[in-house]
Length: 69
Image 1 (tube, rainbow, N blue to C red):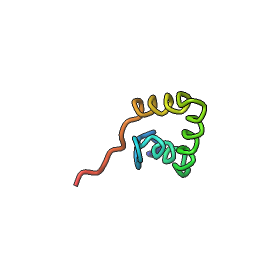
Image 2 (cartoon, rainbow, N blue to C red):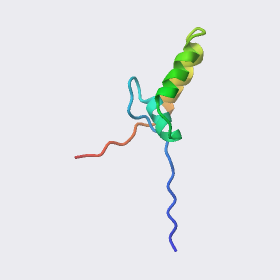
Image 3 (cartoon, helix red, strand yellow):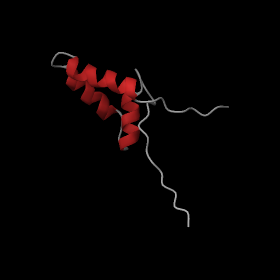
């Protein structure tokens, strides 16, 4: 009786800048545009509230593995 468990991984993918919003969108199952809007709104009061979490996620999140052909 083998039970396969699939885990979702937080990975950078489908990115415009670094793939952070694309990875968050894939992980949570929603359109990445909502995360892009969120980061833009967070950048309005001076930049740091939006830039700092984005940079931290860019450093922490691994890149999505691309298939080798």
